[in-house]
Image (cartoon, rainbow, N blue to C red; front, side):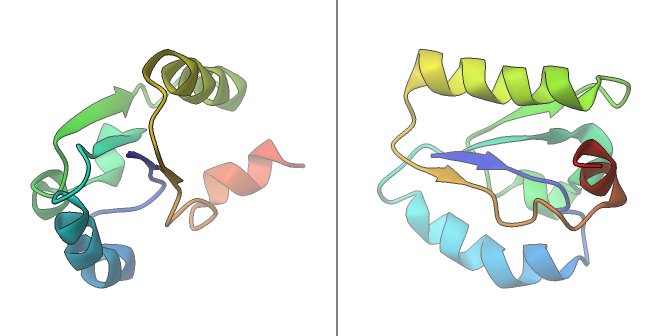
Length: 95
């Protein structure tokens, strides 16, 4: 399962509301997160099998390409984006 995150920091509502279901998903999937290092806290890091960190200065277009390349290479069974759109960075991308 590939989980693309925009916000999963300690204390964030997405962490509180989604971490339990993601932990339960470990029964069926390896769960890989893709996000900026600053957008995931220590508690969030414990939820995932692995984390692919995006450099903060990477242009959005290159980040989208990295997500696509991972998906085309690894063929995850599920693509989950529970917090995309909760940051102003994504609003700039679509302007």
